[in-house]
Length: 80
Image (cartoon, rainbow, N blue to C red; front, top):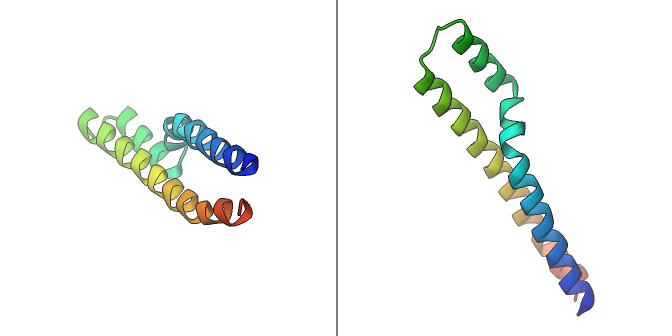
């Protein structure tokens, strides 16, 4: 039972850690850097840049959710 609790507390802690890191990760992808350069050269308006940055955060969040969702059964399996 203790391993079960430790496993899910650790799982929750990693979710919180990575959720806090998403904005930084999103700003450092190749696509986001390219969009930032285009925005700085005034090729795109601020609305387009902000939307693209938001979409990049969502993409990273979705990838993370898939990975964590697939890892969750391992926690359950090891804690049986």
